[in-house]
Each structure stands twice: as structure tokens, then as C-alpha cells.
Length: 314
Image (cartoon, rainbow, N blue to C red; front, side, top):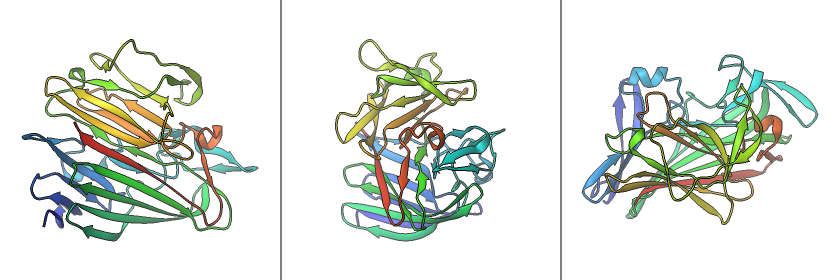
């Protein structure tokens, strides 16, 4: 069979591996630790590139505070003081990042394996998490994520959220991968960001406005450039692509996100101080959207929303 799915142990954790036998393209999923993708390897030509930077041991993965590969739901990024106002009511989330609430309510929680399917041209795993009236978020949402690897060398992440309660609820989704390309560091790469508008932050990394984001021609070199910024994506179709480029290795990682109403219309790019990876984070709403409403999806009872992110090498 062209594709296979198998389980293996990673310390105390149980992982699921989706693999294409002919190319060794593979992804490694950890349902019991927030449903994260821990590894992703894709081939270009004769080279198999490992694309995700994650903690190096099971213990470090369990203790990770940098959100490597995490699914950020029902909000992403920071909510100052954990406070928000929604439909006439004030809410208080737990403060898990100094005085802020950060990156949602499903991180580190165990997900349920719903499906694992192998076909001749693709394979996927679907995981789910039932979010029920958490502190500061008294809503009921069924959340799921599906990871797919196909014969075209494309890795896909599709999320879905359904309001199974009786009241409208605010939802936002983001993915938090750290990317690498071979053994180079950030200074060797260039990036194409499909945006001409950058979000302006205050000293608490909360939006206070926007500014033009302009680069002269082509991709922006990351050499000696530090980024920790949010961008509003140019919406000219139903999809858009961010490119991480290694000219020396003649390889480009394309991160394609759905755009349009309710989709991934925002992006965060972050270069950690170690400069050994870059976080490229598609978001469905702006930072602090629970308060500013920018891109925030409001799900009425019984309704669902979904979106897909695709990765490939060219």
C-alpha cells in the first residue's frame, strides 16, 4: 500500500505516524498532547526535508512552553489580563502568560482519535476535543482537526468547530508551527508574506492600529531581521501563499491558507532569538479578537466553521 498509518511510543506518549512508503513523506501526530503535529518530513527531489522544529525529547515536549505545533482554539495569541466582553457580558479567562491569557484552551489536552483512513493516494487522521464551559468560556463547542498527507506531496491541516450549545459563542483558530529548512538558520532564508498591511502593537503586544507593510521587490531577506508581527492578508481569491525560501538549497516551503469570509485572513511571523527556525502562524482573526472583533467568528447554536492550511515543497 502506498500509504500507511501506525502507532509508536515516544517516551510515555503514543504517536500516530502517517507515511507514504515510496517517498518517506511522513507526519507524526500526538493525540494525547493537544493533537499536535510533532514532525513533518517532505521530499523535494532526492532530499527529504524535516520541516518542523519541536522539542528534542518526550520530556521536553511535555514541558514545552513555546507552543511548538500547537492548535490554538478558541482563541490565539494574547488577551490582555484575560478579560473580554462578548454580547453584553464580561468574561475572565485564566491568566497563563504573566497577566495575559494566551493561545486558547485545548493546548496539552488529550484529543480523541475519531478516524484513521488510508487510500491509494492519501491518508488521514481525524482527532476531536469536546470543549465544555471552561473558566471564562462558558460555551460548548465540538472541535476537530484532520491531518492529511497525499500523493502530491501536500500536507493538510483542516479544523472544524461546531457550536453544540444554546448560545452564540466567539471562536478563533490558529496553528503555531516552527519551521526549518535543512540545517540552515533563519539568516540564510527569505520570506514572501502575502500582505501589505502590518498590525501595530502596543507594549503588551495588543493591536492598536495598522501600518503599510512594503518591501521593494520580491522576497524579503531574513538576514539579521527580527520579526514578531501580525499581518492582514491580501484577500484576492480563496487562497493565498506564504513562502519560506532557501536559495542555497533551491527549495521553497509554501504555506497555503484559505482566505475569505471566516477563513485565515491573518498571519503571525516570529523569529525566535536562537534564529534556528521561524514561526509562521495562520490565524482566522487578529490578535485580541475577542475584544476588538477583528476577524472574529461568532457561531450561533448548531452552526459550524472550518478551514484548511496546506504545505508543500517546490
